[in-house]
Image (cartoon, rainbow, N blue to C red; front, top):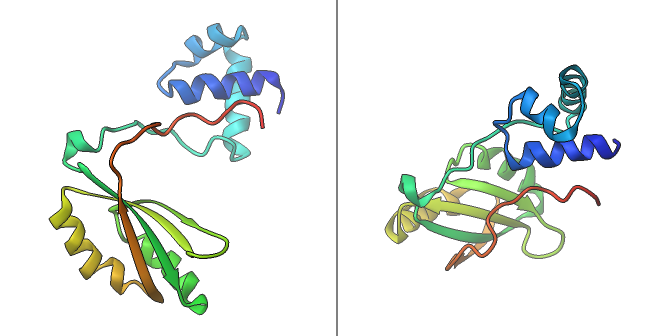
Length: 149
C-alpha cells in the first residue's frame, strides 16, 4: 500500500458515492489506474464494502446503550454466532480481560431496550452477567480511519 492507495482510501471513506472520474480527479490519476487500484484494494479486503451513514434517531432508534457482557469461557463461540441474529446489536467487540464483550445496542426507547435486554440479551448463550450504560451524547460520530498507522 503506497501513498496513492492511502489517498484513495481517504477520499472513499469521506464520500463513498464518488464516481471513479471524480476520484481520479481528486487523486490526480487516470480513471483506469484508479479503477485498477480500487479493485485491488477491494480484492485484498482493504475495502470491505460501501455503506450509507444513517441517523439512528431519524429512523426511530433514539436510544443507545453500551452493554458489557461477562460470559462462561466455553460459550464464547456460541455467543458470537447468536449475536449475528440480534439486529439491535449494531457493534460488538470481544475484549481482553473483564468484561468479555462490549456491545453497542440501539432501540426506540428505554422500554424497548428493557424488553430486548430481558427477552434476548440476557438469554444469549453463556451470559453470566450484563451491565448497561446509557449513551448520553455522541461526542465523535463514527469517522474514517486515519490514513497512516
